[in-house]
Amino acid sequence: MAGQLDEAAKQILGTLLADFSDRELTAKDLKSGYEGPKPEALATAICNVADITTVDFEVAFSDLEKDKLIKTGPMAMYDNDRNSSVIFIGSYSKREYVYLTEAGYKESRKAPNRPQRVQRIVNNLTITGGQFSNMQLGQGESVSQSMGITAASSDSEIVAKLISILEQQGQSVNSDQLADITAAVAAANEGNGKGAKSLLAKVCGPVWESVQPVMWPIVGELVKRSLDL
Image (cartoon, rainbow, N blue to C red; front, side):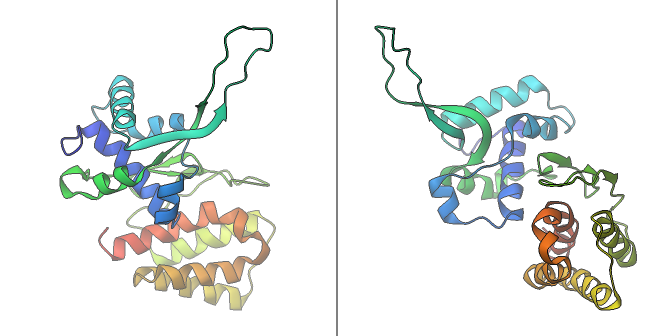
């Protein structure tokens, strides 16, 4: 199957690659395994693509597993019945999440295997076509709102949306913080993801870990757009 992927398989690998890249994971994570998206969230994202059905997804997912391009986890030991004469030795996957293997990463990077449009999952919720909707925080209190950010959104609209996310967490934004948020958006537009993230972390302070799953995809999309990714 490797090297001759169908569209469903390309979308699965492409979506997992986008998740891997957005989270700034490393080769070490590929080697040791990492906690990726939930399979059901991945299925929802992939089946949003025209002409890809649930059956297409399940067949492609199974084939990618067989080819060791993706794996699921976490792994757990078999819980044997002490009263049974049959004992199972080994481990099995609970299939709570799915992630790329080293081989899967390499395959997803090959030009023929890159889909024209990639779905994205943030906190196991789907983002399509650069538009963010009904996203929630990964921990603590939740933010549930229509993000309304599209490819045509102006910098001022994006700044206003980032401020709105902070305000929903009870954080007021002063003039210095506003300047930093504006600078973060500008840095993202120049492809400087590291600088943009540093500025946002500075503004958010202790709530950064909570709001990052919502805020960073918005700014990260600007970075990708500036780099034509």
